Length: 481
Image (cartoon, rainbow, N blue to C red; front, top):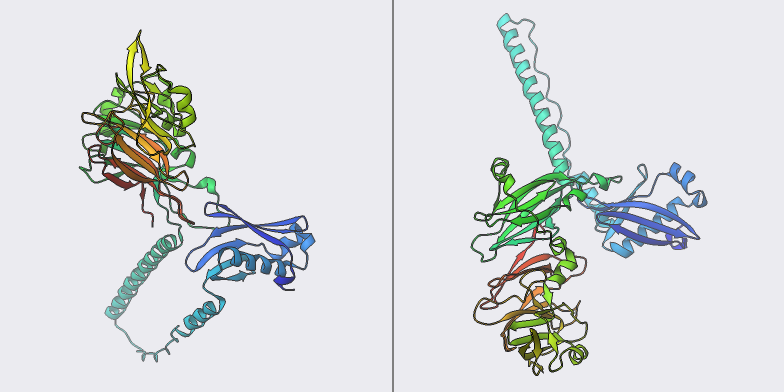
């Protein structure tokens, strides 16, 4: 029976570097674990041995070869059209191998032809019927020395072989950003975690994966090159994801990766155990503010505002037409900052003079600014739920916006003068904004680059010069190819 006569459907499920190839037929299923291979073997699929099928899939008795052929042909068609399949029936393993079957067979034949033929043994040396005690001692010493050398070579070869097996067949990984970053003045710190290399197998237990956690340190002004410091090894995934930054005392930034630690802000280095022991009791106490505990989207929202007072007599806001009609009428009362109310509809920038009467800030005559409408627009705050972030210099605040609606566009940053004039505008190259690290001279942003097919989006750090709008971009991954 050929695969063409088997009507079953094949689906492929992925879970990181492994998953399930599932065969469906008339209400029955056959689940085959798969995992990435090494070298020319792209994927290994555990299809099971003959005696296993008789017990697990009695409905498929007698059709194992045809079903495996169907699975192989569908996997090749769906995911690996440039490869071919090879069945190791003794182990019940279906291998997806790079190249077509003809080229694979040719490589095997060429390899066999290239193996050198064994040389004929030389004739034995003539033996002597007599030997002196000195000759015997020399012979014994030579034999003992050769045995020691041979044993040493065997041990060395075994050690090198084990190292080569682990090196050649282990899955290599790269370090990437994890958790929330932290900023203290000119220092920006980001946690990374990296899955430690492992040798793939058909029955690998992901719960045994271990991670190395490090801290990637950048200077916002670029005065020092980025540096990466390892802080913990062999952590479970759950423990690695618990890495958090604490507060800083002006000299050190504190963190916790199972155990507490600190970064020296002047040098940008992580303190050693002895250094940390001398300052362990100096860690600043938490503020108790609920906003300090926020992370993810909630933390980002707390750093964005729909507008507010840029001076006691000047108001700026970004709103869509419907919200502006409702909230921005003359004599309307406004607060120092407005909540982040980014609209999916295009938003315009609005300006107005402000008068103060009986402690209330009242709009005089709001007008639409000349800046074109934008999506997901907002102003930056100086801290979580703080006032609007003032740009370094005599005038200006920072506005983020998207010219093309997500997910097709990228995030822009603009510096807006108090009168609503846009001084400069720069593309951050970020498709998904995840963090804002405020600063009046060099605000920083963390997010993901635009996605490309079959490639995970790269996390990046972008620092912008408030005076010129020049953006400097750093990757938050290490070792990615």
